[in-house]
Length: 66
Image 1 (cartoon, one colour):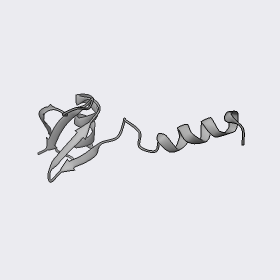
Image 2: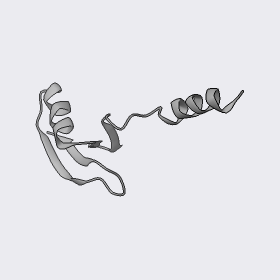
Image 3: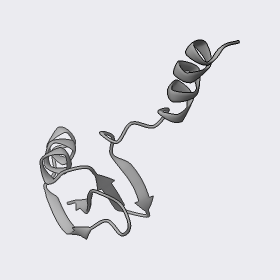
């Protein structure tokens, strides 16, 4: 394999988790890239997003659906 075929494969494997997804951090607390993503996620579950603050050492916000 040469570098031209190996590089896209490595990039594809490294990008398995997209930054645009909502991730469970701990019980009842979720992380989203933006407050709009958090609000949309909770709205889809017929609830309201309560922002808990900025996610530590990462881009994004911590929130809870209530």
